[in-house]
Image (cartoon, rainbow, N blue to C red):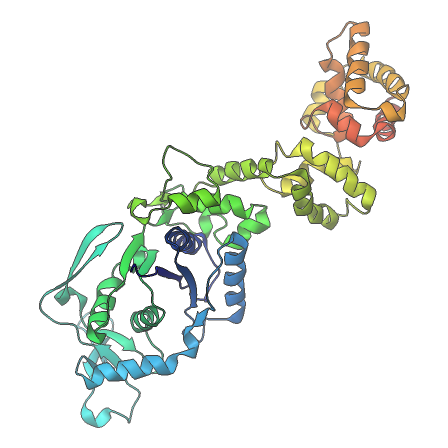
Length: 462
């Protein structure tokens, strides 16, 4: 019978959930779902000084927002300190580890450095001591990485390493091995920075007489300058992207393709399709580049895929926060506005930036628009004629088709191009030179509001 696949994501709550960790969690989740297995969450909070409950909440919130649900109750390492000490002591009793202390050694011409020495018998139990694992001097430790193939380390280059600190807290090596074993983890999928940890952990598995899980080490994520992704490249924490107006589906899709491809150069891939196609062995070895412009493009695609009602729920709080939407009539107007804006929006706040003038006329005309469209002395007269014809349209018939017919009819009568009416009218109604189709936006603004805004200009130039 095939063994159930069990994988885990094991963040340390000493900082925010960043895109590198999120991608690791996402690949573990996809692998588990593809294999019909379990995705587990472990909080590695043994760093007492730097781990905080707030960071735990932030990590959980970020994973939940991305849609990465876990199948069992999370494990907290801080609750298992007795277990780590028990197994470290067991290795000491069997001669596979030893109690150790540090000494400071002055090196000629060098700074003082700390060296480990095995504790003398009389020191045991009297002073705080760490526990260090004895690494065989001879031989090699190898494993077959699911992404990178065979990786081999000479034991002589590994050296003895600490598994339990003098304060009783475990190091990553010991806690990781014990927890992965007792959680039944079958595959360890993590970042390539953990490759040097792997031979140490394999040696611990062998020392305990346990089966070793399979390992897969993911490539790094780099910034556009091909250096390690960091704050200098912009936002790196998952929830920062949420606050920027990135949709979780878009970030999920984007992160999934940072190192893995479904084939056929596909870029927009539904989650259920990803689950069906995901293969950890098809993850590349080369570092992936985080391209924010590609993420923004992908987000714009997912925005357009949403219904108007779904987008209303997402952007309504942003309009309310700015004091632009105050009642049911405003919400109805916003719902009518969404189809005009979603073709241009890359992030959710774009709806506010592109659509605020539907709810407020407190804006300045763009200077380039004034220079280009309002300098001709013929403009005021043309706009007065347009204002008169728009006023003749019954309010109930103020629809984009009728508005367009009226404007183009006037342009024809005046013997001018329609653009000579369209561009200045847009500028006066919105303050901008670009945006949704003029006739559609005029319908949403309504006849009376269009006339009022035209009058504001005409009064100033009369």
